[in-house]
Image 1 (cartoon, rainbow, N blue to C red):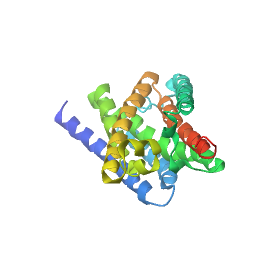
Image 2 (image 1 turned 180 degrees about the vertical axis):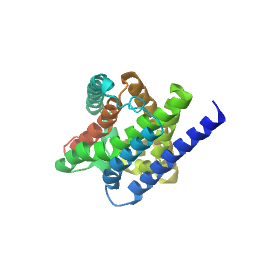
Image 3 (image 1 turned 120 degrees about the vertical axis):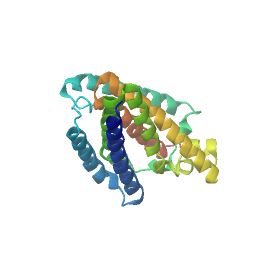
Image 4 (image 1 turned 45 degrees about the vertical axis):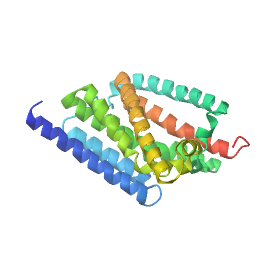
Length: 239
């Protein structure tokens, strides 16, 4: 890889990472639901930036040619997550994983969060950034393997701030890693590792389908359906 191309790639990826870092901090410490406003705006900015530096719609997973395959993969992904979650709720051993105080919501608030906040405030930006722009940039210069690994490692690191209270909020995580500073560190490390591996799966789904729609559907199903189940359990005798 020529030195000029390497510098260009580092500059472009670094610019995207800085933008995402600013969004992450703003979402964590700014007004409630900052991401719901900033997320779509930054996603649009990243797409425009990617197009300006030469990425095609296909590079970004947004080509019309891959819409139908993406839709098929999307429906399959949602169905697969629903089946896994149904089994998880049915088994007493795995049910505590759905007991999360962050999602003790009124049914109306749970529906609003699952179908508005999660898609627009979380899934849209993360899929455009990690499986669209970053994957496309690195793939153009270094190939699919480097693209998937780079995107997924950054996706894992993206979850450091959101997981700082994970051991307090989630019953299963708290039981596994304990409380205090040590538990918090272990929970964050686990979250980073888990989401990095999840990122690899999302990248592969994006590669096979050719469409961001497939990865976005799996991402939404994992978050949105999990939230709805947690909220439902919190209002029933199963808790």
